[in-house]
Length: 90
Image 1 (cartoon, rainbow, N blue to C red):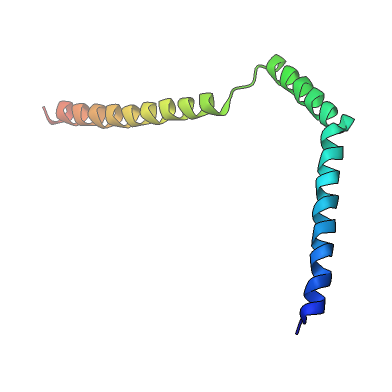
Image 2 (image 1 turned 120 degrees about the vertical axis):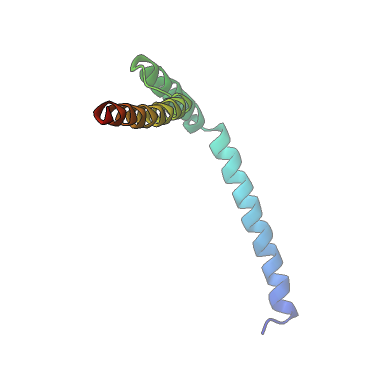
């Protein structure tokens, strides 16, 4: 069990850790790493733009178009089969 002296010593440790975390965050925000990350993202975006890649939205649209085309093809196949069966009956 923790007594009141343990609670008292835990509070300053928590504050120290919070302060250390805040200082590390400030350091990383001000460091060149942030600039490197931004530059790398810009470089990758430019490279991907040159590759003429499709976006997720474009792929989703094409998937829907393909699904509709498949449905229509199935309907047409069924219709052709029906018309062929009518011809053979005559």
